[in-house]
Length: 91
Image (cartoon, rainbow, N blue to C red; front, top):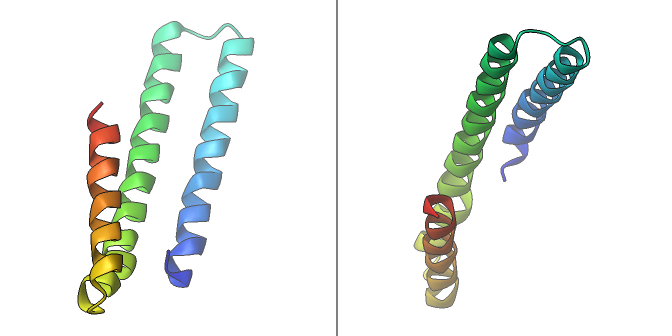
């Protein structure tokens, strides 16, 4: 991960953490189930945005570097990592 991406990702993760704590409070307070589900949907959407940002950073920095380095072993390793990730995400 690029150093410049880290603060932005941590900021987003801290917001998600706050959202999750808010959902827990809603459950403790016996709030309406639909309201809780709406907030859970927002948490999932925020987590997906973090995933997208992290993948984008990985592709722009780690994978691009491996592809342009001329190191076939590193290129193949990074390619295998991405294929494995895609398999896990689809499963």
